[in-house]
Length: 398
Picture 1 (tube, rainbow, N blue to C red):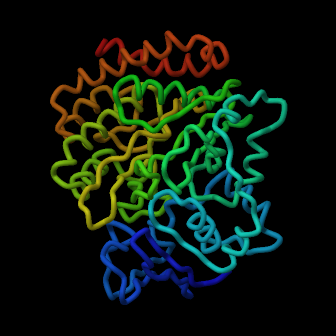
Picture 2 (cartoon, rainbow, N blue to C red):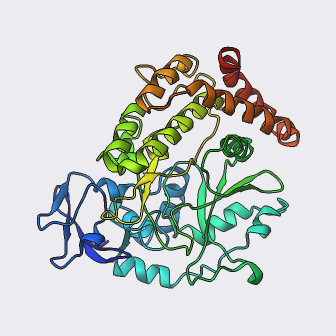
Picture 3 (cartoon, rainbow, N blue to C red):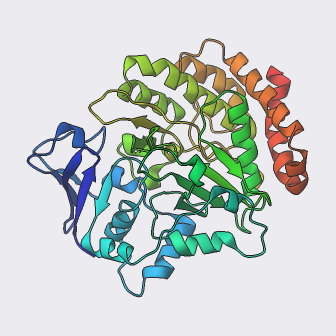
């Protein structure tokens, strides 16, 4: 694999990332425009940016878990699967955010592939007769511009002619499957995200397949014309690698919001942050780590960063009964003890009436579960786990 990769944004060519003997270097082109900055942490300058590992903005989309395993199975015989190859793959086709990375080797590899696109309704109507998820992974695994350990794949959408937007850009769908390892995971995420939406939280469009095996979500880092928006998760914004995603606190996220968002975006972003953390406590989401929060913006020079919509909300106690919070909440990681921690965290986020937010989410939870009896019958362990986590909140705030 090449030791030098080209890096660009919608504002033009940015620079090159190099792999040295002991570290990684990124250098902007001499004529790079300020709008071509690749990160809020890395403004355009003459000096290079040097890291022992890949720079956090480049680590952000690297595949993990199931997707990484499938890539290794696919490529190990023909290419060395190292961080530079994974970066070129994750940054070439459809990376989350606005930073594109390319190399001749990966460009040639992708040109030999067919990415025809899929219709949303056909995915949702899958009857289970064949393993459509495995087929999608086989077809689109090289478009690996998304991180996370859960089995997932990102595919271009092939819309019906009548619904096509007036744009040359392509809509993208992220398709997730729990496989056999996490039974009911698609239902789990659909229910938790439905509670988020029901409570008034900003969320992307999402769907559950008719057989409840696949959870489908539209990517949210696109504007109305499907042009690229900047996105950086909180690990990247804190200068941390992906392996450090459990290392900070929810208060550190609030601090990052104040640091990177303009004053007019801070109150709304902090209110949304509190709501996201609160709901994670209520539904028992022990995986709300740094990579599951992020900022959206036009480009680093616009000063319009705001908290991204809520995503990746699931109950984890259905699979890890004694699970705890992913990050520190005012000195504690206990899901059970998080009720008091949330009231203190509300002060950090300048949320004046946190009890009202929590009661609203509890009411939304009841409405969603009451109208989701069918999914409860298919995944009773998931609903039982959610209710068990919510019960202490019901007693305290209900």
